[in-house]
Length: 82
Image 1 (spheres, rainbow, N blue to C red):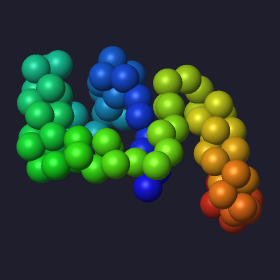
Image 2 (image 1 turned 90 degrees about the horizontal axis):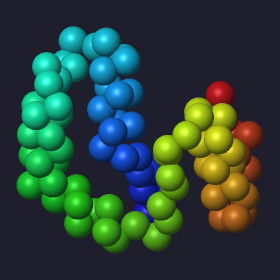
Image 3 (image 1 turned 180 degrees about the horizontal axis):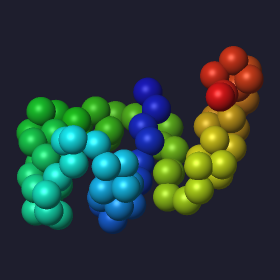
């Protein structure tokens, strides 16, 4: 299992920048949504992950990290890259 992790601050900034209809109205609402996901068991799933990929920098850095994970698993990342 692979987990992609970004800090609370990064996740909040990214969701706000997307400008979708379901964007939280405040950091408190964002935190409430996080707590709901934890209540559904997402924390346990994350804890069981075999691999954690940090998503705390640029999109290109994130893509490089994913490619490396795929390569280490013997998979071709070209099939999955966009």
